[in-house]
Length: 152
Image 1 (cartoon, one colour):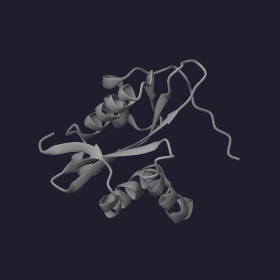
Image 2 (tube, one colour):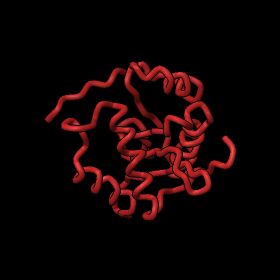
Image 3 (cartoon, helix red, strand yellow):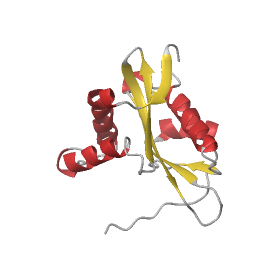
């Protein structure tokens, strides 16, 4: 991965971030009528810059061009004293896949989690996302847990 740096998101990144965000959501079928609302997009964006929010964003930057994003959240849990870090979103542009961008974003989130005293970094992906799972299998281990969710 030549020329790419991982850094915290900045307010001036909005347009490129929004393009990546839309691509990420479309990848998971959240586009059109099933898409993420502008209200949620704006709230997500604003959380990155609110010091009272435990939500953070990193971007992969190649000479001013954003190649990918990682959003992560720190939260308390019942099995450790320190926080856990949940990487909720990880996405790279199609034309950058296989260049190490995702791996670099994961490593940077891992570094932030360790610096915050987190004992665990975790994430999940869809069972059909085989390309991502090849990377994830190389940098982490499967927990054995299956995610259930109930819409409220």
